[in-house]
Length: 189
Image (tube, rainbow, N blue to C red; front, side):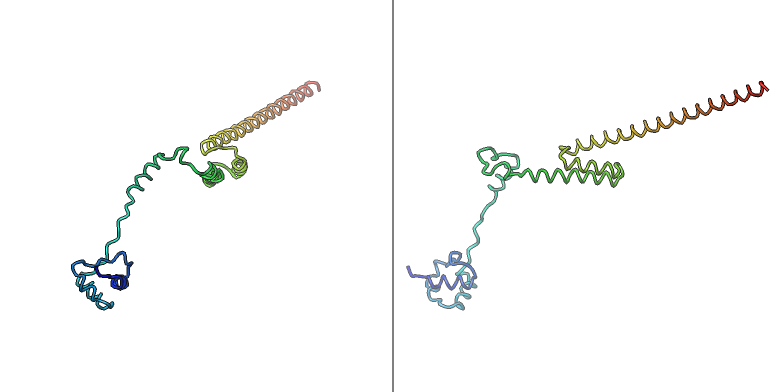
């Protein structure tokens, strides 16, 4: 068999691909062997004696199937883990996510005036101090705090009303006593 090394190189150059992608027609070997210029190869390519092979298919179906299984939690057991727990999912990231969730909730409650700025500040510091493990716990705490504040206000109002009533009662009693004294003084004279 004749050597077609030069022909393959020229064909690859014309086709703008590698030599492994060049197909030379085995039935037209003599014509291809005689071609020794790029111009000749352009003609051969046009005639279909030299063709660029198609790219090989590199299927991802197996990869996709495995990833799908991994999403369900398969192939993720102790034997498949290389990094430490901290390396695989850092506790700092968990902390950051929790902080952002809780702070976002506090901001939302403050903007909708569900909590005032004083309660916001105290809760903000408590969130930072790791007092609430999740959103639900924080919401429960807020409801409890609000009810406590309302109760304190109500008690304060009741106390004020009671003091007012007592004061009015004392004043009435004093007025009655003064009236009585006045009457006694008038009867005495």
